Image (cartoon, rainbow, N blue to C red; front, side):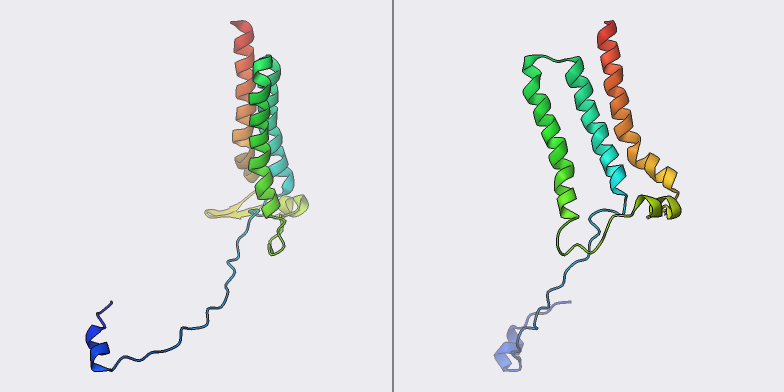
Length: 142
C-alpha cells in the first residue's frame, strides 16, 4: 500500500538513497517451441502449395502480382521467426526429428505423442491445401 511522503519529507525524516544497480536480466524464451524444423517446413510447404494450386488453376495476368505478394507474405511470416531462432543469444535449439519421435513433446496439458503433435501442427495447413483442391474442382465443374 502506498502512502504520501509529504509529511515525512517536511519533518526531515526522509532518507535519500541511491537507486539500486539494475542488473540486465535477459528473459529466456524458447523461440522455436522445440518442434522439429521439418514440421515447420511442411507447414510452409502446405501454405505455398495452396497459393500454387490456386495460382495455377486461376492463372490470369492480373493474378500474378497478388499471388507473388501472398507467397512473399508467407515466406516472410515464417522466415522472420526462423531468423529469430538463429540469433546469437538464443540458447534453445529445435528438437531433432529422432528425439521428437522418441519422446514426443510436453504441452501445457501433458505429454503429447509424436504422431498426435504432428497431426495437431499440420491439420490446418493440410485442410487449407484440400480446400484449394476443392475450390479448383468446384470451379472446373461449374
